[in-house]
Length: 269
Ligand code: 0O2
Ligand code: 0O2
Image (cartoon, rainbow, N blue to C red):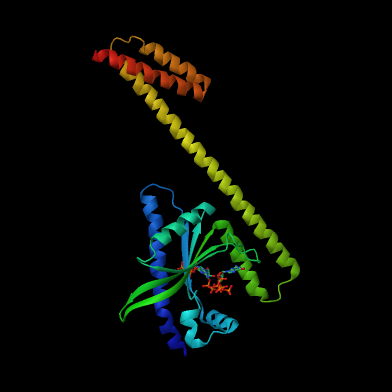
């Protein structure tokens, strides 16, 4: 293939990468518009350089006429997440689109099965149906889903591997393995922080809901005029509130519920 033929060959790959980047960024934008947490932090993509395609074909013994079928990452899209759990969510979102605007060919979980180099990422190979002026064409594309920490490690390791080719000094290799371990620990720590933050948010919400309920209950009770005790109830609420004992507040709220039922029932009779 001469350069022009290569350029023509790569046009649909460029198109597929651009469309997929827009689609995945679209998911992020949808979450943001809904004011929800987005499992996608950002998306990049690229079409493999001709030199890299040739090098990979040679390394894997793939004849030129078979590269379209056998090299899966000529088109590559990368989805970066903040937390490891977000990766599961993104994988689920992609699976839900299987058979719709893409077709999943294979999944490779290098997070459960870390590569000997220390590489971690979740790969999904898809066929993306591209509408071209010559009709539909399915484009093999590799989607890499990884956290910021995984990406940081992989980017540095990739450039060092590229620099040293097969002759990476042993001490650098060892340091990279240490760094992979550190990136793994960072992801684990961050996941735990995330759980803590989520738990704190849930507790905060449960507390706010309960306090709103207490106020509504006292207000309702004071409307049922027989009860002259609303002031006392507010007083009691403040006392417990100041103590900061959430169980006592829950207990107080349950008692208010019972009172409201008793007074409500009496009013009906
Ligand atoms: P190679 O073949 O890895 O050496 P943009 O203008 O934002 O669309 P830009 O700046 O051209 O994109 O590039 P982008 O998307 O930021 O990617 C730059 C580099 O990131 C690429 O370098 C790749 O190394 C890597 N990269 C980004 N996305 C992917 C992906 O999905 N798969 C793979 N394998 N690598 C990716 P090169 O030199 O272009 O590519
Ligand atoms: P690029 O564009 O330079 O990133 P392989 O035989 O491992 O080259 P294979 O079997 O086709 O490739 O697929 P694999 O291993 O599932 O995924 C290939 C891509 O995953 C690589 O593309 C890298 O982007 C990434 N990857 C896999 N292993 C490593 C690793 O140890 N370190 C880093 N930094 N990235 C890895 P390429 O071909 O290297 O292309």
